[in-house]
Amino acid sequence: MRQSKTKLAKCITTSAYFYGMAGKERRSYLLLIFLLVVMTAVAPFINILIPKYIIEEIMGNQNIRNIVIYVLFIVVGNYCIAVLHKIFQEERSKKEDWISRMFDLKMSEKSMKMKYEDMEMESVLDAEQKAEIGMSWYSGGIRGLSDCIIGICSAIVTFLGVVWVVSRISLWLLLAALLAVVVEAFCTSKINQASQEVFEKTPAINKFYSYIYTRITNREYAKELRLYDGTQLVEKKAIHNAKELNKMDNECALKQFAWGIPGVFASTISYSFSYCYLGAMVLQKQLTIGEFVMCITAIETFTNGCLLSIINHSQQLMLKCNFMHAFIEYMSLDNDKKEGTQTIKREDFEEIRFNKVSFKYPGADKYTLKDIDLTIHKEERISIVGLNGAGKSTLVKLLCGLYDVTEGEIQVNGKSIREYQYEEYVRLLSVVFQDFKLFGYSLDENIQVGEAENHLEGEEKTEGHLQDIYDMSGISQWVSTLKNKGNTLMSKAFDEEGVEPSGGQAQKIAIARALYCDAPLVILDEPTAALDPVAEFEIYNHFNQLIQNKTAIYISHRLSSCKFCDKIIVLGENTILETGTHEELLALNGIYAEMFQTQAGWYVEKG
Ligand code: ADP
Image 1: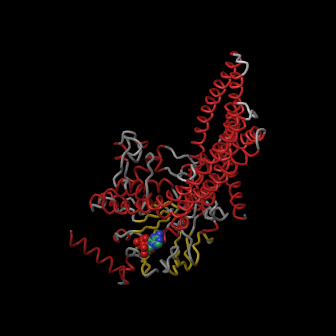
Image 2 (image 1 turned 135 degrees about the vertical axis):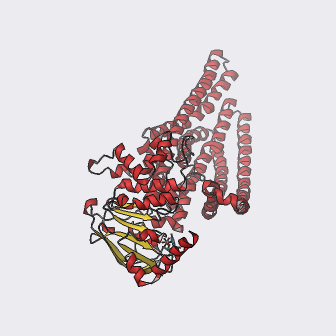
Image 3 (image 1 turned 90 degrees about the horizontal axis):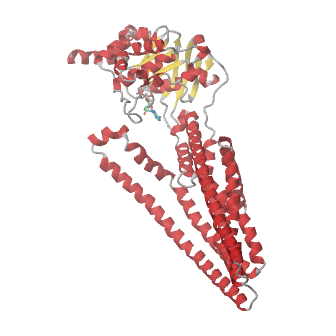
């Protein structure tokens, strides 16, 4: 009892939530649903009531004019309702397309706003998967919800009308039909329960399944799959997955089939009873043939139509609301990026301080960074070096606020970075990540990603400024060869005239993006890894010009490129092992000196 109460409550809150959102997106949608309810409810009565008058006219007065009027009434009535229904459904479909897209967009916005570290949590990924498939495969989203609401509301109105028609002839008939419907409804609830069980079990398999079909088969993995003949491995995993899903679907279908049989049996018995009972009444002259036809059609509408529709649609509604509730749960995950209220202007940036900062990745046992103490002053150039996995990128991610420190504090101008409004804080940073991504938009849009946000104090970025950026990042020559110049899409996926930049070009675009931000702190994580030696030389040569009077944090494996930095930090064993200038560290003759000499030797030997 309590369970059905909670189900009902969930159903009401879920419907209210989605119709509230749908109404905000397309106000006339709710009116359209109302009109469809009224039309669907009224339509059956044309075919229940009018044939009685036609039959009685044929059996009685045989007035041709009256018969024609009745027939016309049925034909024109049904036609008008069918046409209006089609128009309204068409309109409804257009609005639902828009509303569904807006729901998708809301989910994407949620994903984009949530804490970066939560994006790798299993529970969050499962919640996202459940919301996604709950809104599509399993419920049909707003479309599926409205099918149920229209089905229930119109069937209730029809139901009341039909009960009135049948009860005037015999209450026994109502009772027989009611019993059949109760049995069918019970069976349908078991059928629905079976698909709910599958929904609960499948997120993990579906996640893997969609990984195979949406990611592995696209270009991201194309090279590895071809060169290492990975198709067989993927196929094997896909087949294993498909088999698991199939097994579950088959078990579900078997259960659904078994529960379908008693329902059909009950309705057959009920029909037989109605025909016999009404037939006997006609033979005893208690009923005209017209009334017999009207009553049989009414009972048919009652069992196969409205009552079953109310029960089925209610069960479907509960089921769909349960699936769709996954969307509400995902949207209300309390994992939006927490931020402070303090503001900070770019020109006020003075200093970064890591105070005994320690960090463990979520779910990890070991510290990736431990007790890091580090101060970076305005206009200083810092180089962070260390072996792979030493924590260099992690340190940058912490500074960018993508992860929260586990212990200690990162301060900017003496205040924890958590105290700043995140949008303001990130305006202090121009970052090129090692695994930067370009968007499939135009070149200029890729460079001006944060344009709306970054037009500070009415500061207009002119075309001339963009040209300077092209020059500084070394892409002017390449841009001049592009047919649509800065408007060229950086992907061929959406436009044949788009281009697929090479690794080096892409890296320069990423550098251009960081330069365009014009933030006081520039962070470059392996900025030249994909560049050819000439481009690399140019970037280093122009480094001072690129950075100008900004503060710079620079991560590179090319130790010779660290020479020009004011301070070199050597990371290893979770912490800072050495700090100093290039000369100081060489004199120290420690890890840096060893790394530098190994690399220098390599260059000398290889020439
Ligand atoms: P570096 O940039 O010095 O090569 P990283 O900062 O990328 O090193 O990585 C430091 C350590 O943290 C590595 O052991 C790496 O496996 C681990 N690590 C990096 N990213 C994650 C993550 N998202 N979750 C868990 N561990 C991670």
